Amino acid sequence: MLSAVERYTDYAHTGPGTLGGKLMRSVWQPVALSDSVEAGRAIPVQVMGEEFTFYRGETGTPHLVAGRCAHRNTQLSVGWIEGDCIRCFYHGWKYDEHGQCVEQAVENPGFASKVSIPSYPVQEYLGLVFAYLGEGDPPPMPRYPEFESGCVVDAVMMDVPYNFYQNMENSVDTLHVSWVHRKSNFYSDSRLSDFKGDEKKVGTLEGSIVEFSADETEYGFIFRDIYDNGSVRVSHFEMPNTLHIKVWPVDAESGWRDFVAWKVPIDDQSYHNFNLTIAHVDGAAADRYRAHPQNPRNSGRGAQWLEIQRLGNEILAGRSRLTVEDVGELAKSVNLQDYVAQRGQGLIVDRVHERLGQSDKIVILLRKLWSREMAKIANGEPLKRWHWPGHLEVTTGAH
Ligand code: FES
Ligand SMILES: [Fe+2]
Image: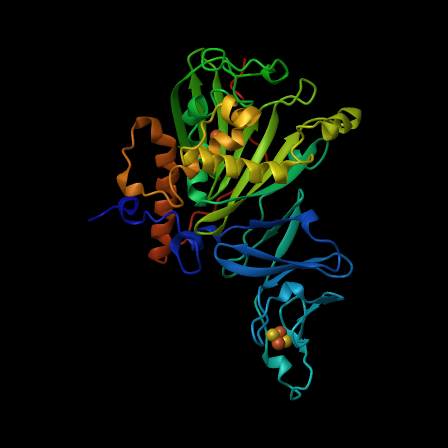
């Protein structure tokens, strides 16, 4: 008889009704950036193959309802906001924030009360809009008190054109950092890199990874990279899809930053990467950090990300190489390097043809936890109640 890990191995598909989709829908997920919608406006949102409408009422309260009107299914986001209701652009049916139809033109009295569309609980936190898309009552939403004050939190979203689980695995696969990013603005180990940008050398990891370890916890798992100089880098993974690591300094003043990332499928071949970057600076130092050209929110990121994808596709097609000669300074871009490695696995990697080794032990633990929880869903058993304790140490491994 096959074990859960052998049997429940479809990590890539998260549409409605799939086991992976049910696991992902069992917790709160970010679905939009808070600043993506002003009061009185609506946008379409797609998550795990489902369409939604995210809008703010006229006073700014966020609401999430179905993507389409119940009447003849046009896209609701192009409609009008009235108070906390949304009115369909096509024939004017009006829905309240609970999805109840409250007004129709030229219809029999009483028809509206029989019509409703799904609505979902939403909460805004740290610049992200979280929604609970699962069945039953939502679990408590994780909170990160240490990021709520005395720091600068930048929330960004990047849409990535391949399956989200490839990035999930990449997130915990720290060996790739020594290779994919060996000549980058992320990692400048003196023995592996010839990149010597002085500013970016602040706080680098001076060593090579010789071993990994990972242990299941109440929130997911803790994982460690052990370096040949004896230092240990500690990171965390919050089940089912959230990474907590330290990221490199943009300057000495703001120092190593915390980074929390949710990988949320748009559909099976693309995902939203919702990233929080947290710099522990206050006052004038916070203003300087906000103005820094490498602050995650500063200009050009959207255009640069499109250029990175274009260059990545050129490299994968063999028309370019990942070198400064071919693609300029973007050769050192962590995002371009990751794109080439992960999109290079295909739109959805074929895991049947892998040869895993002991260096994959953290990836294997991630899959094991997913397989075990998916098996519980398949068998109608209760899922593990993941609990983020509020604060955990995340370290760089630097001395
Ligand atoms: S499609 Fe929305 S009112 Fe007709
Ligand atoms: Fe990477």
